[in-house]
Image (tube, rainbow, N blue to C red; front, top):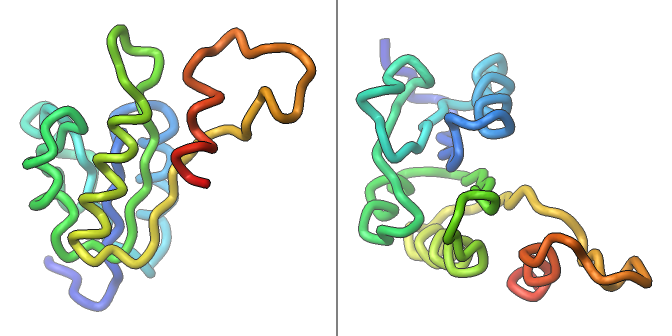
Length: 133
């Protein structure tokens, strides 16, 4: 049965540990419909109310993925070889803005170089606050 009174939240990274936890948490609430975004929707049809193809490396897939969404939750796959996390996050933010998304949450970490005297062993971490800030 289609539910029409809840706000739609699109979850990027819905098949991973963090993203799937967000999907489950939102589903337990009667306040939200969940659209799970994945590169392989046919493989994960059971994940959520809707399962839609989306790939951060293919910006054209994000338009349909974010259409009608009130909010977006993004977790990037920074550990995947060759991932440009900053580019992916920028792509998602721009697509969400174009789609009229009201709330955007990017699960990330603080600027580790700003809160530590040592340089980061994770090269993607220092770039995250620069994108947001």
